[in-house]
Length: 172
Image 1 (cartoon, rainbow, N blue to C red):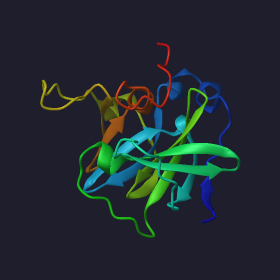
Image 2 (spheres, rainbow, N blue to C red):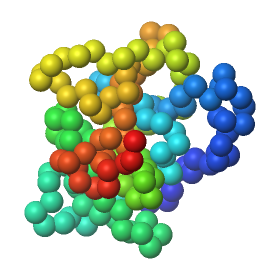
Image 3 (cartoon, one colour):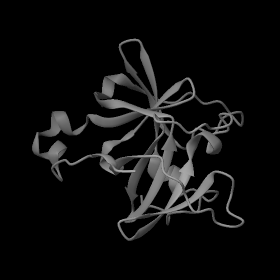
């Protein structure tokens, strides 16, 4: 399937606009089930339609397999399976968000991609502490845009977590 869209941006766009803008968080928003999530656009390499993957024996269920992306073998993670959000279905709206994290390329399957939003610090609230009921280690917080609430995922932490094991730990 052809590439849907490539996200290109100046390397240090936020820094070049000054300190007031540098604190803003630009996120790509996507859906998983009924919920809307956001990840830092700086980690997104491109968006692609969902293609068939090559399964890897004994891989965890959330790792759908791998694809060859212009000569790079890219593991594909289904976020609906990873977050226990029910059985995924793949259709024309299903998108693979190709991430570049710590020099590694990883694909993340989501139900759909909505848009790109810039959040100010006032629009980002800390994730509520839920004890052992919900692991909030992988959340930056909750973003609010008008009536919408976005679950902001710390994609570096999630992809470098011990259970994912896809990317070396990111130095703090």
